[in-house]
Image 1: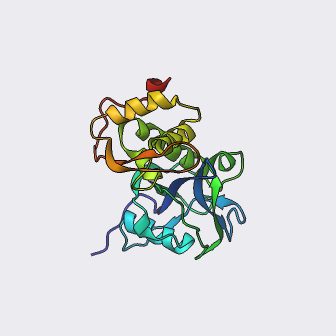
Image 2 (image 1 turned 135 degrees about the horizontal axis):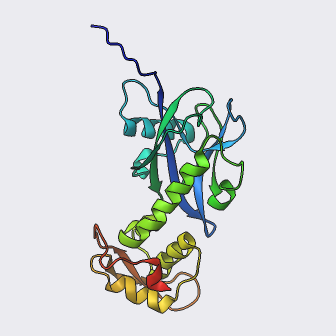
Image 3 (image 1 turned 180 degrees about the vertical axis):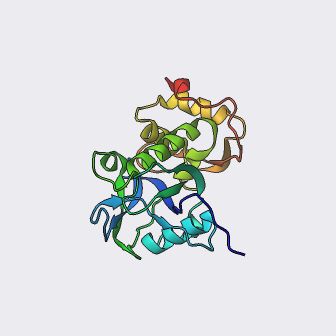
Length: 233
């Protein structure tokens, strides 16, 4: 049986926002486009969904093909959909965006139709005209989602190693929120939030000063009370 529809055909793509902290700044993984449109411009990893693919499968495949980042290191969550007419000059295209964070961004290697792949500071990428298509909007949405999730989930612990100090965790919040936090107040809040942190039972010396106690994520799905930005104001 042949099915017809009065609705026009359109394409579906996936775009991936992957964030990490490098050189004490928030950075995103981007590729340099090797072909038109926007040849030579930076873009988020992504591409067209194949007819036989699920959306998550397509995101994993595109990430691997364009950047060679091991997908086992990345836990993707759906961010939002973007479908404004004209967002892609080639076709009517709707994109489903994904978000992930990494403690240490591995060195990417360009592949597929990408001319390059690098970690770039988010502040640089969000400058006018730096990103192709509507990827500045998508990246901005991803950053804001991550900033918000720091308040009510354990997302901040995904930016650090499995075992970390409170000072290392605090620096994640400072980089993400863009301002310094009082060390003593931060330590009290995060160590008293049920299910957020667990003591490892060891200390470590990293840099000058006394050894610092090590913690790991305590597994809480939701932080209660939430650690809102005003909490540390």
